[in-house]
Image (cartoon, rainbow, N blue to C red):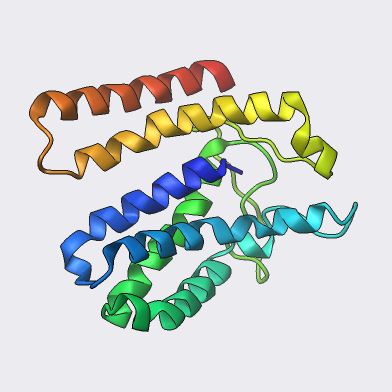
Length: 198
């Protein structure tokens, strides 16, 4: 899985790119909902803490079916809060949810993504690791270990460098130099990821 930093930033990019076209009265609430939609698939990690065989990571929660259902439920529940057209809100939340699958696929490591579960259990991973590898543990102690924190800290920093610049690029107020610097930072972080993880 990517870290929560990467998934959150990708969802924020999705919500920000929808911008005025969504016509939501509370755009910040839409960003929060998009982040929730992008983070929901990793709730399956909680089941890993119950012990071996309790669940598998990147199973049904990392499928197109789960992404569609969770985006639909979130859109229905939140529509009165954000006051946006239901179809458009659903589309933004669905793309945010699907960004989770894409990031985990591009990480190129860990259990394969099974987008068609439960109907087809074939898994897919990118042959090239384009995003940093985040790690998960099978115990609470594992999550507190220094090695776990260090590896995931590096992954989160690289994800921040890769995914934060697109948020700057979506702001029309930024000048050409700032946009060029943001794009350069993002490309440099992808190249660093390729060098470190491949």
